[in-house]
Image 1 (tube, rainbow, N blue to C red):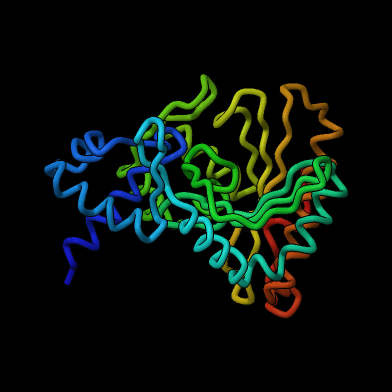
Image 2: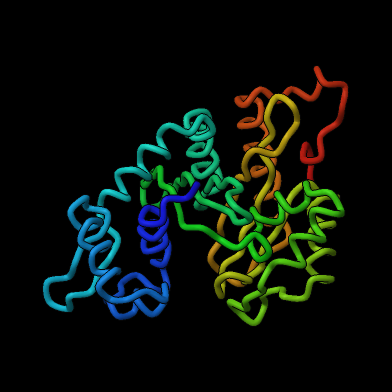
Length: 263
């Protein structure tokens, strides 16, 4: 059974995004197809509980800091975050690139942790969410789907072009997913942002199941082949170390691993 008022409150919070960080009562009313009086009552309750905040000048609403507090609790309580933290920072330190950890959540990728040595930053966070079809981490998870599951994902996905390089053709995407499956890693070349190249590899658990993807982000459109190989080698090494922390020992399973080496 769904409680209508609770569902509507969740819908209000879910309507905020990076591209739409603030909204008025009128905008929320239009988006939700509800009377302004109904939306106002819900917003008032969310404000009281710090799940929304209101700009005193514009009178527009934003997500409140309570969401950040709850996200921090989730991030710090994730088993994968606790076990990967030290190794993720070590990976960022070795490569001098931003390293991130992401999990599969509702058909999209959710960032749960990151490390950037150049800015001496280490952060545990929940978000942002990224489309699976145009992110390197997402293709790691798509590569683990069965043929039927991948077909269903492609059929229900609404492809959006973020840059001229974003792959929006299902057949082309299927080929990229197969490439990631064969190589054991995925590369995103400027599909989510211009000048941004992302490498990702799988993190496996004790059953050999993909539970997360670890990635390295490079800003710059020029990448010599030798450096690309070094990045991939370090990424694979880091992914294997974190996988072992999650209980993955292929030598005890009698099976090989898709990402022990790179081309």
